[in-house]
Image (cartoon, rainbow, N blue to C red; front, side, top):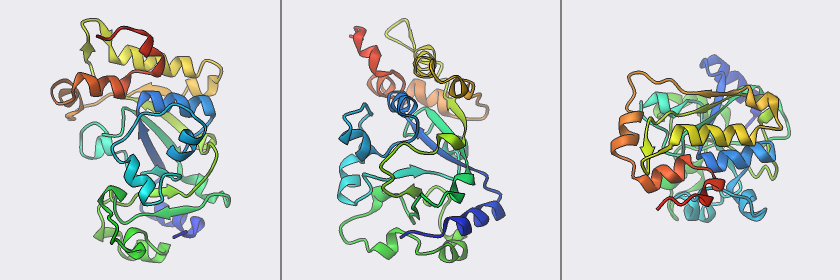
Length: 238
């Protein structure tokens, strides 16, 4: 259900929320950079661009969110604190894009991975900013997923503040540094976009479980999926 973007902007400012966030894998992030903005997974598929598969892809198609772009009002990496499960690249945006009338903004009451065929629309989405405000404390911050509905084009990079990359401090296959390969991919993707390149930074964590999780709880295959760009497929990874 579309809600009033200006009223949402004002509510978020009242809550002290100044930024939106979107996390993804290095390979998908490179596609966003090369195409000039965030893209819905349906758009990437239709245009035959590269993106990393996600376990929720089929559900997203079934529940009509395949063509939506998902963003959060909290950096989930720091919020929990552990790595963001969607990927190690974080795009950080100013909320002022809500003042753009061209965008159709919806807000979920829960992550669509928890929906099923019996979930009613009123239980999926907030119907208005008033309902969102009145029940703000009833829904955990990570459940309130903000979506740009069926944008059909690259969006939001004019409001981009930073591109933040996790440093997993993990070497795979004896000599492949995930940090170096991921940063190299982002730098390569931005070689013709100097303003974007200036926004790239490495995340510095303290009191966070991300690095121990990457080392001990994430398989090598998943680390490759998260951190290695598509052009790394030319390497023999064994």
